[in-house]
Image: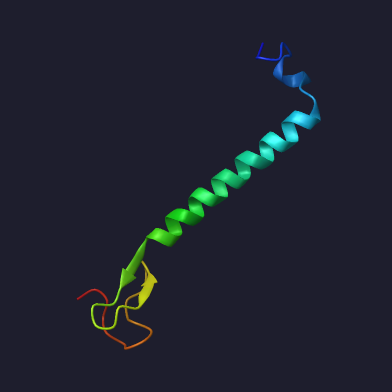
Length: 65
């Protein structure tokens, strides 16, 4: 039994569907945030790149040096 007094199998769709939507949006936002915060900056020109980049797309410098 949960807070509403209904077993989880009998919850109305009006509660389950918005709850599932909210959880999916929260998970997607957290993954997007992680992807946005893992950046490399070029030491020469300061351009930001994804973490997997090896060379600067602006000046061509090796980002791992």
